[in-house]
Figure 1 (cartoon, one colour):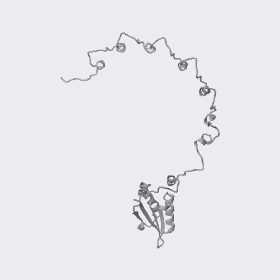
Figure 2: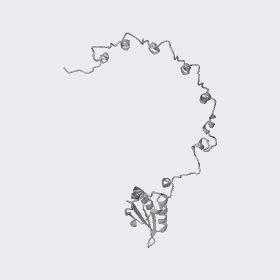
Figure 3: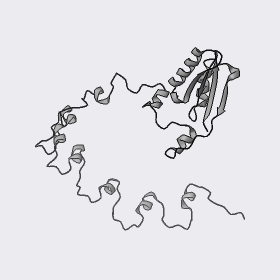
Length: 227
């Protein structure tokens, strides 16, 4: 439910300053009312949107109103707008005259005279008659008779007489007379009559009557049953 906050000021000057300060802080002019009283006092009332009541109170109280005449009252429920029921229920304005209300509320400039676009930072025009500005910037033609322009640019051949240029570059053979070069390098025959060559290699029997051979090898106690 919208809330109306009212402050009475001893002079019209103080009231006007308070109203202008509310506008600077992002409150809609239509939500602010300034009414002179019968004496020299002037009343300022504001109906803030949902969530902005404390800010409105802070702004008004910063201009030193007459404390005995300060009030905060809840306004009558407004008629719900079927097009924006939540906004009308909360007292929010749906359309703003300010095209950037958040920036105005936070006092941030939306447009500045100093342009700092990415194109300007890297020295590239935002609008160019060049159909391929990136290729032109790095000196690469868009259409070329070279089927591999990038490889040609860095001096790398795309077709080699060697079928494995990378292996040849690092000195690694791709084809070897040995059908199992890794096994041969560690001294292990790829084919063996031994069904467990690795166990034989490290001296561990494959089938044991001991159900925990590894624990027994390291003298670890696994599980014991109390007698």
